[in-house]
Amino acid sequence: MNPTYFRDDCVRLSDCDSTGRLSLPALFDMFMDVATLHADDLGIGFDDLRPRQLFWLAVRTRIRVHRRSDLSAPIRIETWPEKGGKLRCYRNYRLFDGEGPAAEGKTEWAVIDTGTGRLAPLLEAYPAGLMDVLRTDSVWSEPFARVREDFSDGEEWAGYTVRSTDIDVGGHMNNAAYPRMVLGAFPNAELRDMDIRELDFAYRTPCYEGDELRLCRRRTESGWELGAFNREGKTVLLGRIEG
Image 1 (tube, rainbow, N blue to C red):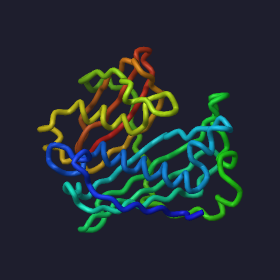
Image 2: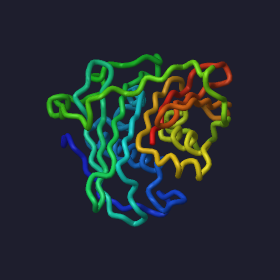
Image 3: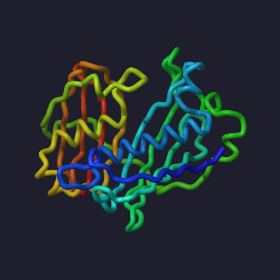
């Protein structure tokens, strides 16, 4: 049980946006992928939990970007989960390229019992001895962003239909699909002007194929606060992006 996982890779063309650098949605994808591989190594992956009707649920994600690595740049990704509490835990990420640290991330996770729909204690998912070897340090200590659900002081600026390609093995919209949805609603020129340095998302209500979402936003001093709402008016996503 190695508490830390490393993966060496490079920035592929399919990972890049119109600037020829690592795209922000691809960064979310990379962090999700290494978390999955490390979970398998620790005995808490999808195939380990499925027989017990348990499934990992992303609650919040924040990514901080210092530099978006260029096409073909060699990269190394490091990830480790923290010990966590009774029902929730954190996983940390760092991305390095040839110039040094390029990005960090942190995700809050919980385990859901798919039979009851309720959160399960982490110890029900962890194999014996795992809690004893997990690290206690974090990429940062500050809390995730708090965003008001009331967007009456903002604007409804886009809509989105959840697609089949957004759905993961849990049957709902994958947490890494939300950044692609949100950032895809901005034109390239606006994204370049923003030069986004931080993204912070809270996942509130699961979405399913065919769901119609409306996206709202309001200006902040350094970026935007965001909200996504389903047809019934339930909050699907709250977020903040900063340049």
